[in-house]
Length: 118
Image (tube, rainbow, N blue to C red; front, side):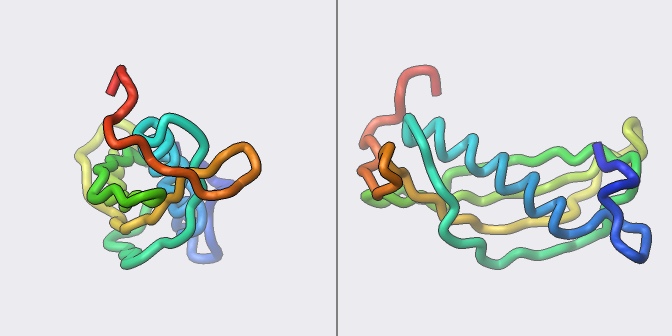
C-alpha cells in the first residue's frame, strides 16, 4: 500500500517507489524461473501512465517474455487498486532484464526447464 512517506513534492507517490516495487516483483518471477539468485541489469520502456496516490494498493503482474542463456526478459504491469477498495487502473508498465547469477555474482545458465512448482 502506498503510504504518505512515499510521496513526492506534488503529493503523488514517488516514481522511484513504484520502480522499486516492480523490481521486487520482477526479481521474484525471474528467481522462480531461474531457480536461484538473479540481478536486474536493465529497465527498458518504463512508462508511467497514471499517478499512484496515498492509500492505493499497488498490484504488480509479471510475465516472462524471453529466456536466454543467462538472461530473462520480464514484462511488468503495475495496477493501482484505488483507495484500497476501489476500481483498478493500470499505472505503470516496463520491460526488465534479469540475469541469473551464482553465489559469486557471476552469470550462470537459466535452466531449460523451469524448476518444479512453477
